[in-house]
Amino acid sequence: MFFSVKPRKNSTRQSECGMSLIALMAVMSLFAVALLAAAPSVYQEVQREKELEAIRRGEEVAEAIRQYVTFYQGAKLPNSIDDLLEGLPQGTKKRQILRESAAVDPLSEDGKWQLVPINKVRNFAKRVQTYNNGMLPSSDNLPQNIGNQVGVLITNIDTGSEEDKTASADETDEESFTTDNTPFIGVVSQSKAKSFVAYYGIENHSKWVFTPLFRGAGTARIGQTDSTIKQQRIEQ
Image (tube, one colour):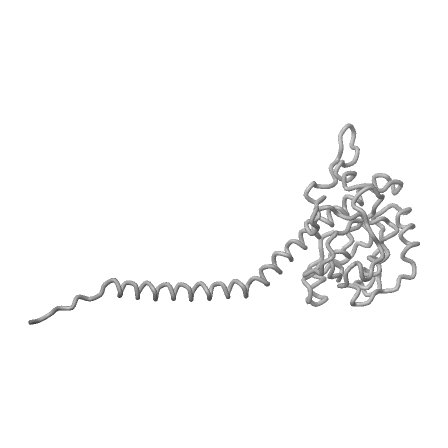
């Protein structure tokens, strides 16, 4: 008597499904490892773009301050970002000098710029002087009385150390800034983080003062040579 043995289809299918699941898990694991490896570079690029946007907006604020101060011939400084947003009198209307988007600091949690009074620009002037090989750009684009006030503050500036460019504001700066109701000549971010982009050779958000004073060099990715930095100057 002969007996026929039927193949166990269910067992074969289960085995195939098990192998497919293992292969899928292996692919997913490799994909997850690749994502983890790429995450730091993705974060750096996103942060770098945010910093460049902060610089663009800060430069717009600096230009608005210049227009405001020039309009009032140095007799009046803005007291808040709202003063810049309101614009300047032009007949029966107002002339816009600052876009609403530029009034927002993309690096701070609440989006508010800190206001820098004219008597607190000395530390930034030191860093600009260091970046420009001991030369401090002039403030000829502002009324003479503003230039005179600044000149008294920055006389005989001692250049800062290399560590000063990256240290947090709490470590090297004595200034404490406000976000409203003070006459100001520049703005600075509330963020105290080290940056991926250098602004006037400075690698810390809290030290990037955007002001119509000391117009000179620009920005570059940290680690670039001086020649590359000069090629990437921000249009003033």
